[in-house]
Length: 204
Image 1 (cartoon, rainbow, N blue to C red):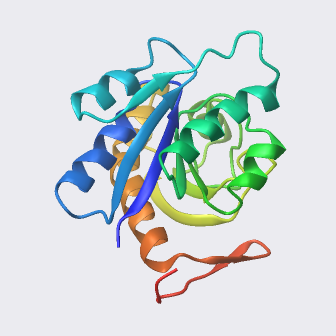
Image 2 (spheres, rainbow, N blue to C red):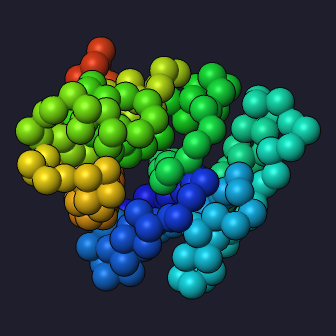
């Protein structure tokens, strides 16, 4: 059974590219049905067109947050989306959206949560002096970078690391981690119990 994905992005969209590579290679039991962005020049739009995936820029101007999210929901529902995947989406989802897709929204964060939540996790890791950081795929709840963890991939912090070198290494880890986590999620379709996931192996 193939799970229908909807991707929402604000930026370069490179994680989308690797998700689509895995999908088209037959290694991901999913199909990206639609890509939505809040930026007219988002790289995710270009990548979606490259892979012939329907995509739309939805202008957030003059919309309250819930009104905007209603527009997103309408597009996702029209495509029968079952799992929402955020790739560098910079807007905070409303409670309305989170409730509509409860426990069916995934996000990727460039740190080993719960460490270094929020913006610029690369600088946070360097300033704190940690020896390891990484990337986390988690379920989205109504708090920022907070929901139950699906998958983590560690990345070492080297003595001579700069912001850019650490960022590049974490992004390479993300390209592997996100498709892997989506596959895990679809095949196990976990139930959320508190902060933990109980994995099921039968069909959802």
